[in-house]
Length: 126
Ligand code: FES
Image (cartoon, rainbow, N blue to C red):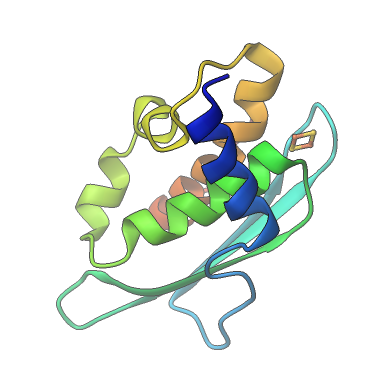
């Protein structure tokens, strides 16, 4: 793992951005990583321009899951809901900047799974 990226990930893990909950939120969703049972919840407030105004995440998990959730929340502020719907696995990997095996990939993608299910208003059956 590249040292610079490792440091960034550890910083997000230790000092998570946008950690907490929003009440009320325009939409919220919570789900788990079936491999470990760790859960993440994401609350989003949307502005009148249909862009993400505020976002918060809560829940517990490993460093990768928490860091990717923290990075993802920073990344989507100011984005339209359509742009959020377009986010992919590659966007998360680009934010993290590291290669991941299949187990860690599930950790990294947990927050995206939760966010997308919230945006689409559907339960993501994994
Ligand atoms: Fe549970 Fe990574 S070990 S989310």
